[in-house]
Image 1 (cartoon, helix red, strand yellow):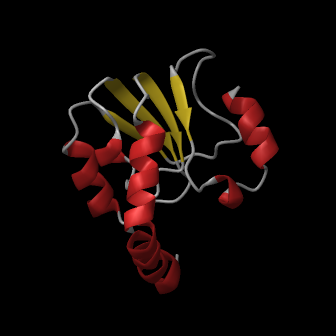
Image 2 (tube, one colour; image 1 turned 120 degrees about the vertical axis):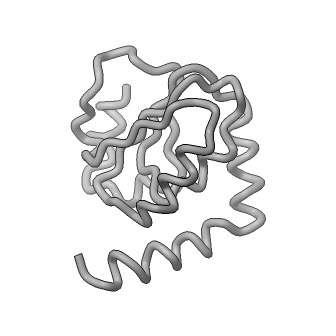
Length: 122
């Protein structure tokens, strides 16, 4: 992985996606989430602080490993466990009906076959 992919892009994405409007949208989207959650594309973990206390666990899939130290810090500061697998959304390693909610924020455009991924989630 080159310097751009491992250092520049993740930091640029973090800066843009941490803006006030994205913060508001995350709070609104995640307010009703509860139980076990599947998150497609955890990225740098910007959603993590916005999950309510009603969440009992997050299972995140993301083929990329963006800013691992940042993701670890955000993951370990939550009141629920965060488990991350570096796999694609088109082939999820979970049993059917394992989750109460599935979350995907600004990630479907990065998945090579988003229709297959959504079928897999379903």
